[in-house]
Image 1: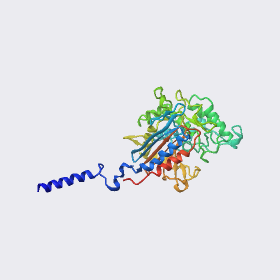
Image 2: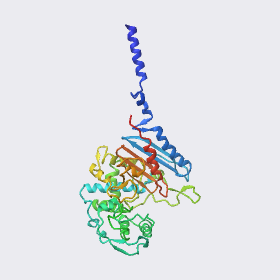
Image 3: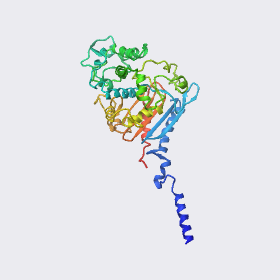
Image 4: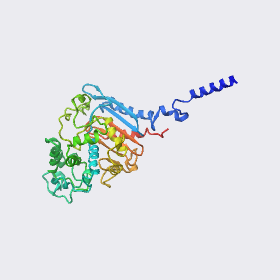
Length: 416
């Protein structure tokens, strides 16, 4: 009997030792390879792609940050933050996120909507009288001095949020676009109101609501934040978004102690070699707290903002936005005015509306944006997926945003 008990005990111990520590057997034992439905070996293709781009001198360096089903599945830094002195890039690198400022300012603005300060259909002139009697260019190639006509309707707050107001960002290449870019970004301005007023001195490129045209409209949102809250936009963002989300590295200026974490922007010289750009935007002393661009941030900070959105306005028990507000922000609001195939535009985000038309991997309902210095992010609610890729390279090229989606989506598998 004693021998029998000893044999049973031995067999039991051998059985325990034969089972993996995570309690999974067979195909389920792949958890060391797969995390939250991501195949880590397939994700290596993404790593290899970025490493090759860096080694062949097309980008200086990059930080990747990916979360799926609430778990960090990829957190990597590649290459250099500065090619001039070969400084290795850091995971907590600080980037000028440029137009990735727009979603943050839009979210802040919608907090004021939830507090009842305005309706989306309100004319902007109800709060900013200078928006009355705006003119529209009859021919954008004639510039600001060409013939104009009065706008056939007033600009509404919804027009601002959806880039359908008829404003421009100055990027379209027409004579009027070029003059708008100079007025907004080359002329000196002391604050956001000064820049918005300069925009209003230019004719609109089209009548409100009749086109989607990428624009400086979010600067008007920033001015309205100041009008409604009595705070600067910088103060409002810190109080209502950055502090609640513990985004300690995000703001319009970089502190002296963190200056070493800043990544300068790079570009190709005439010989095709990647170099530090001769002109850099200032990292301190900025007083224009705009909605179009201006914020510095890190990948981990921006991930917290994205987590809040993916969680329908909640973050670690804090309620920043209503789920219903996030819903209308991330659905197509512009019909077929947005011309990218399979895409629409919500309130502050591009939105995927037709996967077949998009000719890319993804999900209907994915929302996203990017920044002029090659920073990218998207949120896929269906897949519970957040992806961020940040570098500092000009001019802007969406190639890396497209490859980011392709490489990340191909790594998805069924969760074990």
